[in-house]
Amino acid sequence: MPEGNKKTAEELFVAPAARAGSLKELWSLYIVPELQLILKGALTLIGKFITSPREVFSPGMVDVNYLCYIIVLTVSGLAVHYSASYRSFKQVIYAVGGLVLMLLVSQFRIKAYKLISCTIMGIATAFLFIVFAAPEINGTNRWFFGKLFQPSEFGKVALIMFFAYLIEKYKDRRTEEKTFFSFFMITLVYAALILAEKHLSGAILFFCIGYAMMWYGGLNKRFFAVATCIIIIGVLFAVWKPEIFSFILKDYQIDRVVIWKKILFNGEITAKEKLNNARQVLQSLYGIGSGGLFGVGFGKSGQKVSNLSEKANDFIFAVIGEEFGFIGSMVMIAAFAALVIRGFRIAFRSNSYYGALLVLGISTQIALQVIINIAVTTSILPNTGISLPFFSEGGSSMIFTMISMGLVLGVSKDSEKKVKKNNKKSGS
Image (cartoon, rainbow, N blue to C red; front, side, top):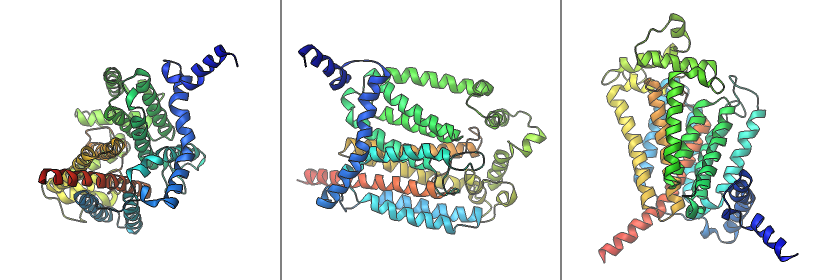
């Protein structure tokens, strides 16, 4: 091959990172290498587990405080779920199975999580596409096998693992404009996939998780400022004139925004709205309000009997507010806050950049879900349908929440070693 042609080939295929540009280059720079690692990561992990298990499997002491918060929230969640639905057998099975998976996942090294990040994302992506071929349930394509498996729950964990891996891999180029654009487009694509499942709240959550991961990764701050301003303007327009976004929002979603504004600004709600789109939110507010300071008592909620159709799922906080009152609700919120704060502490103590990003992402996901769920049930935000971790009904939600907790506990072993090492140094 002539020298000139060789140089051209090198420019096109070997060093695309040196050239700013097209979507094709961004695809070849960021996406193709990760697709090639989907199979390689799993095979490498299996090979190491067989030949040298200590490289990927490391039993050790996890963060005890974090583990205690998980147990308290799980037990509390099961108790409240039983009160709301009187049918907690399946939920107990999901919780026990999730705890077993959590403990198993927690015993792997951070290196093992990193090895299969691309593989996990590849599998989750496949499920997010395949779910469109599954039968519709309640007019949406969100589940397999009835309501047994929801790919979007798997996808949240996968996205966090994948972004933590990518951000660490490209940390030397994280302030470049095309790096920001690539991560932003990945976030948008996955949010659009969830939106196509007719799951607006899931799409919003996916976008927020991806956006938070980009922030934690230190991507271009100037682009962040511009993108954030555009997003805020878009949200304000969606609140002011939701019909403008009719190409994205369904009629019932637009109605929910309209009703939310009426509730928030003391507008007049029609009798028809009270029986339809406003019913859940109004009954939730009635339940929380009737709980007062200390609540009506465990199992004594009146709203759950016939007024709250989503009493064991998206609106389970209304049952908490009615039965345990303001004090009980604040105790639950404090438990979640302790879990999230402890998670951030584990992240800041970690020796692993990937591990720190992983825990920050998971802690942010939990915080976002709690904030949005409570904000919806108290009508601070429009009705979007986000589950409350540990409390809301659902096998996928419980299982993948527990798996994500296992990842945090796995990273916490590294944090504990760092603390012990520092203590020994200070002691000497």
